[in-house]
Image (tube, rainbow, N blue to C red; front, top):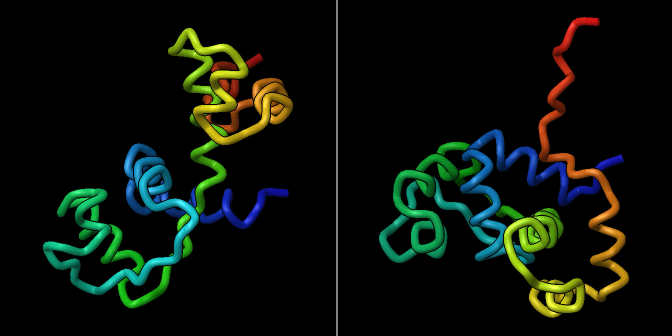
Length: 123
């Protein structure tokens, strides 16, 4: 069963796209922020995401308080660092704030964001 953070991340991905959702989680994850109906020039959402994406988020959630998840982004960051860097597990742990044991566990789990290449294949 997905966590509340995973569910919110999925909703954010649907609303503003995966790249923007993970950028938002990286920059403001773990906070609750008021999403105005119209984002001003100096609002943290506009600073973090830019005008176009902040406006999309405002159209979707404007007038409410949004709890921005950070765990799904942190888990994705572990996998990304393992894939594109020469960091050791200890280095990844230091970079992400996880313990080495947690990094090993996360690297063993399937990545839900990866597409199944054979999902639509007819047998």
